[in-house]
Length: 152
Image (tube, rainbow, N blue to C red; front, side):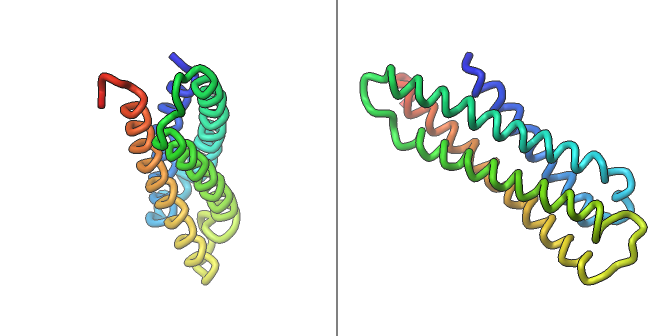
């Protein structure tokens, strides 16, 4: 089994978990003290897994391109583009989360305009991770189905 498959599955599990933690942190002030460090750590792991899966996917794509008797279907390229978008959204979410937990949304900090901005940015970045994760998974299934002659 190619490494990309295993790492990609791990990224597809951890990235949404990080996004859910970000949503809890942004929307449930009482949970901030307990989820502060976990959010940053899980978001960092999600970003690392997404980047690693992308690197392994690039290697797999190179091998498939070199050995395929015909050009790979467009679905494979769509999956690659979606994977890049997931990595970018995971990076943005980690950046917003790290800024938020140590600055405007730090537990015990009184509410301010920057806290409202941080909550909105954290929710938007989490939504981007969730949306791109779904997009990447759908594209991955389409790519696998398009490259397996018996599944078409």
